[in-house]
Amino acid sequence: MIDAFTHRELVCVELGLALVTVLALLFIAAPYGRHARGGWGPTLPNHWGWVFMESPTLLLFVPLYFLGSHANAPGSLWLLGLWLVHYIHRTLIYPFRIRTKSKSIPLLVVTLGAGFQVLNAFVLAPQLSQFGAYGSDWLVDPRFIVGTLIFAGGFFINRDADRTLRNLRRPGETGYEIPRGRLYELVSCPNYLGEIVQWIGFGIATWSLAGAAFALYTIANVAPRALAHHRWYFETFPNYPTGRRALVPYLF
Ligand code: NDP
Image 1: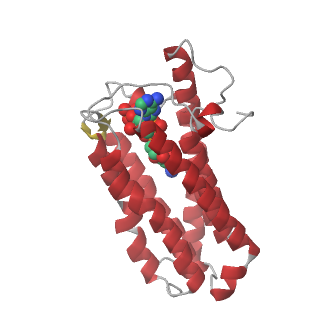
Image 2: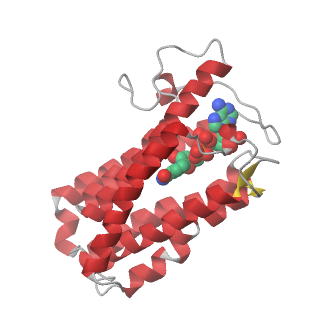
């Protein structure tokens, strides 16, 4: 397990990476999905790309967690459970449910995504099981309870929004339609909104700079993509609802 000084340095690296990421993605839309284009090198089938990109969240995160001296603390185990609920789905289930036949993702995007998840595993896993104090008293702490409820709300929004997108295509289809219903009446990308809410909740539940760094990185990663999607919808569909915002209802 890493020492506290190295851990603090890695948290700072993640914070710095959030800044670099938001600046880069405001100018260059990550080249996958509707923003896919040539010139980004070799590619992988989309679903395998997702599996490889997210695999460190399970293959590295879990062993690192169990190296921590407080790995059996009740609060730590609960936080690990929240992590696994999200990432077992994202890594092993979501990639095989999306209707993405014949589409591919650049190896570069997969490698950068996986590389970030390696860094993040060294930031969050030791936070949960080594450097944080998440004993049984943490289970009744208001920060833990509020954070967990926010996480659950974000999780529901994200899953519900991803399901709506999936249902826009029949098996084998790869085109795009205007998504409608629930939060899609207010924003173009409720799936990204849910993702952000989830990790803000997780950050609150961990009450740590490490948790805040991951929430900030998530915002840096998906907010520019929400803007790019939003612009794309207006350019692609002349009848796109004008009242919709990109990411945050009524605001942004
Ligand atoms: P997108 O919204 O771009 O796409 C999600 C899926 O829905 C894709 O299969 C896409 O197809 C399809 N889709 C999207 N819009 C439409 C439409 N209008 N009509 C028909 N099909 C559509 O999301 P991402 O692929 O970027 O992200 C997927 C998940 O991963 C999300 O839940 C997101 O929150 C999460 N994520 C998390 C990140 C983080 O930093 N934590 C970073 C990035 C994503 P196609 O691929 O063909 O466009």
